[in-house]
Image (cartoon, rainbow, N blue to C red; front, side):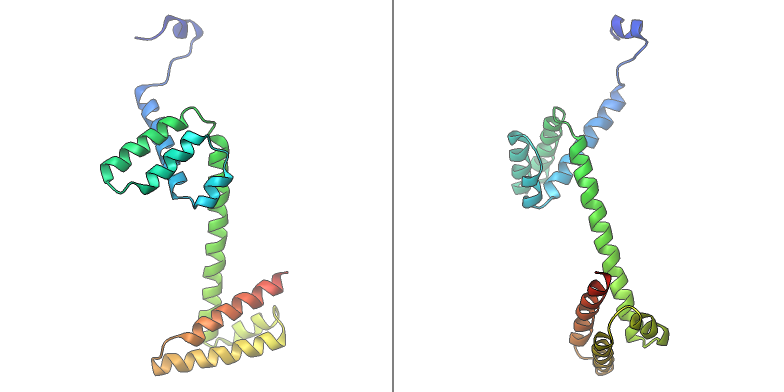
Length: 172
């Protein structure tokens, strides 16, 4: 039954489905909080009961009990301003995406160098010093030799580390 005041104002209360969607979003937000590292949880401005619920949810291993705890966490989040939490999680997600993109880029560089593409060496030579380029050439040769001999890829790992360091110093 709708409230007569709502009808007079022309506003309607949220539907049951909308309330369920909101609860699900809060549970998802709570689950995202559970997945955060402890240091990042400490940095957030959370009420003590929410912080305790997050810690307890981390320790629960039983599926049913964990689900009940997630629902309780969502209930606690109803009375908290979640906009700053969503913003913090959004910033963290963006930082993760940038880090992953950087790592993929480094791996592509390594693959190009291991394939001994002439254009890749020229392009890289314009971005880093000659000494760094010479070290990378040596590591790439060693990595190709390891691949041919089917040995563990120690030089390929070292190539990735040196490539990361060279490109980071070139960006600064």
